[in-house]
Image (cartoon, rainbow, N blue to C red; front, side, top):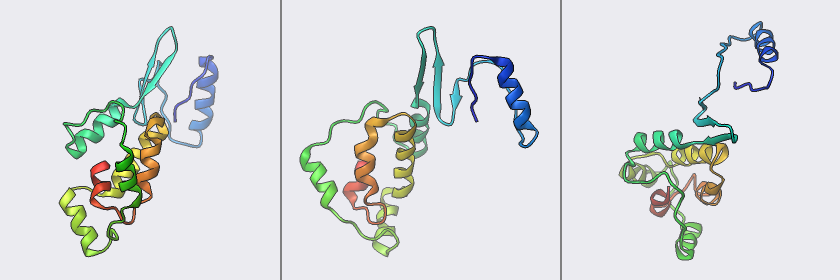
Length: 146
């Protein structure tokens, strides 16, 4: 849990009250990371990003050649293919073979992308919406897009 406020004494009192019921630790000073978020505090304000989370995904899945920058626009024909192509059921033999061929679990990847979308990448919204429609029956084009 991340607790922020202007009055440090109020925060300490709040944490002491919570500590009576839960196992908590308190640390003074500004937070720099929280749940995959990078937090940078400056005079101008607070910048929140999820670059370290995206980088962690890239390393975990061996996507070293993929940039964590903005997603490239998808052509209308590719969107149509993604919307209309139905793959095998993920639990069928063919679905399991597709998972083995691609080397990752489609639903896990989509879930990780959903998390990035929720915490700080609203630009992932359309892609997440489109890819999650096929969680039970992704085709090769969906694996490629993920």
